[in-house]
Image 1 (cartoon, one colour):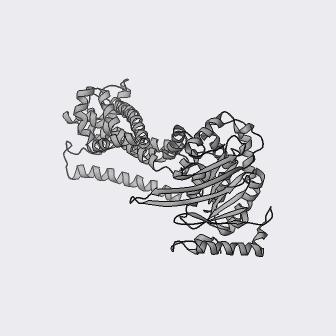
Image 2: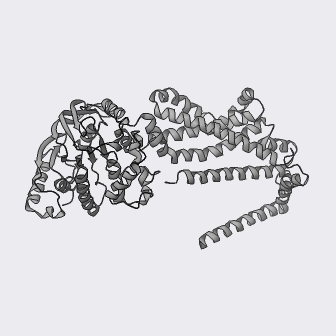
Image 3: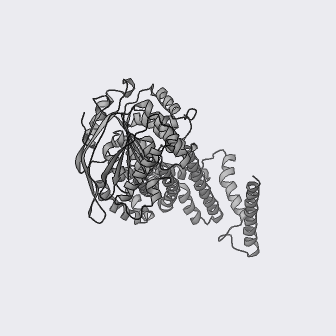
Length: 293
Length: 260
């Protein structure tokens, strides 16, 4: 199935309504093909600003790909284009996969974006209500996913009763409820402290290995990208374009000891240099680009 | 806890003190009762309006205070419901439709600047001397603040919540009902809290101008009859009604918008 823009995206779900997710067989990852994606927007002063230009790469089914780059390089815009939330001004996004007939993607934001008036369990079920494919027995699936992200026993709690890290786990469980073949994550751990971040990265690896979904992961942290990804797409800013694609060689499942391997160090240094050479705007600090030292 | 008790004790002391000052002022300064009646006269008036009517077996007698209070409460309630409904509906429409907003917002803002109480004489021509014109006055006062607060609240809903819904292909209606309106509820309740006070204000103002019934009408007849103590009693009643309505609204808010 090929989808171009938001309009098609709706049709996907019209179709999906007739085929409840609950009864679907094993999900496999979607593949993404970005074909010369460009995006320009008009600024407040009336100038047109090029946010992305000529972005082309492919992501294979089940692959974990990170997007890194300086602030304002258009990573998040690119992710929103893949999600169908924004239409690119040029180029095409082709997503095929999952069950071959339709694509089922889920978005994880930097903030947990849980709805404060719903319990954690209901928050996990909200995607089904938003896309009108609610099936009663999904409650058990939601409980299973909450257990998967380590939130068993918090089903009846409200979001404000949970810590930031726990809220983000709930957001991940929510994203998994539709059995997505494509997970789009926009700096999902950006708002967490360093310790929770490491832990969440580790958890995400485990969860991902159990779902087989394709992941497109936007991050500011070089180490997070190197730890989690199969490949890393390095972007530079103004206009946002791809300056390199790095393959990460480490075996899975990876443990935190990966950090100590010399090859890991070389990889992160290489990435940091690449980001340094890119047209980084002077007001972006090294800390912001590189994450933790 | 200790702070709380001493607070309420403090309030009680100042209240009693105020009554004493009031009493002494009327006594010592020898202020005429048709200008400032003493607390005893006002209390007597309360007894007449609230206790004696029971003793005489007809609590809703037209000279008692129950009848005008209930009448004002009724106008306030219906005015609040009508005005609340219209205000919310228009707020949602203006927030959702740019065309609608561009057409109507300038007029709404201009109308907001009109002191709406000045419309009371016109409402009497349109809706007559009865309760309905009181209700309409109350509704007019409720609708505008609610329109503005609900429209603004719907405009500032967290963009990521909307993106979340849209990423699942939610329809506009679904986004409105499941995301935007619940997100805006805390601010909408701020509008409702204001609105309930405005409704009372509108009802009493309309009654003052053209009341056959209600607190406002009673105040006018008391003025004519030189019943100044009765006026004080009625003013205290209206204050108590306003405070109770506001309190009830806050309780409702705590229950409905429990997550804030």
